[in-house]
Amino acid sequence: MTPTALNDPTGIITGTQRFSLHDGPGIRTMVFLKGCPLRCLWCHNPETQEKAPEILYDEKACVGCGACAAACPNGCHSMRDGKHAFDRSDCVRCGKCADVCPCALERCGKQVSVEDVMREIEADRDFYAGKGGMTLSGGEPFFQGNFAVALLKEAKKRGLSTAVETCGQTAPDVLLRALPYTDLFLYDIKETDPERHRALTGADQQLILDNLRLLNEKGACIVLRAPVIPGYNDRKENLKNVGALADSLACVRRVEILPYHRAGSVKYGKLGRISAEIAVPDAQTVRGYLQAVSSGTSKPVIRA
Image (cartoon, rainbow, N blue to C red; front, side):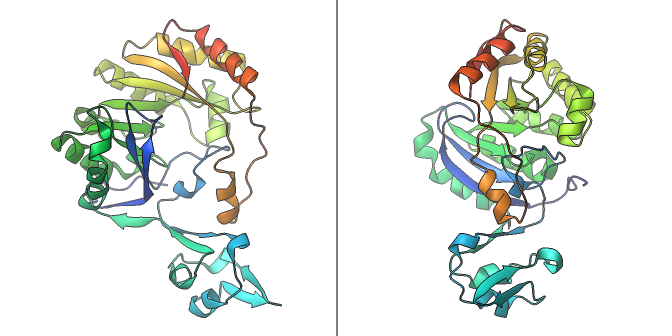
């Protein structure tokens, strides 16, 4: 997949989330942009991987009315023995089925302008209390480079705090364009071993590390974030290396551990996919994660 051209005046988002408390200082309004260059095996937001809109289907919510079958131009929906069947093989994601469905189908992804997004951000301004603001997430926000930079620039123009959750897999010039308008980079480190990183995410890690060092050289405010997934990247060696990486970069303020949770698992079924079977770590295990990272750094290590 190729990131969108930098002259794209609009963007595609899955939506916004209000009153977020763990994705930057204060109360944040999250904006979830579609599209990501990585394919992490544990992805919590699989509906944001593709830039194009997708159709979510909740089988349990289907009332069997058959409206979708009548609306679909490609015959992807059908009623068999009173039960609904959805064959995605010819689906072009036009959304006509979701437009007529009362409860089970949803079009995920809408094209919006900067002003569309800022209208929602401004509606929450009273809750920011001087600290909170807008956080871009995804997917990978910089996959839609021009749109992400335009959002950040407009937010700063309006005196709002800005933050970006990024995996760092983007063109360096996009980061440099975003830097003047970004108060905080929440920078993911998925895995420190190159081969494991490629196997777990589908991408080489060199660009990610180069971009992290570039932001550090330019004096960006950075928080390293380490999603820890049992059976995938929870090795003590990897966690200690995350700490050591933080220790080597002057602009990294702290490390945040993100233990695996199953909040996103239901989304796979709605997309017609199967989620990985991963155990949720208990409190004692998470404390071990924190200790392992702390053994490699003198900087603060917390659970996000």
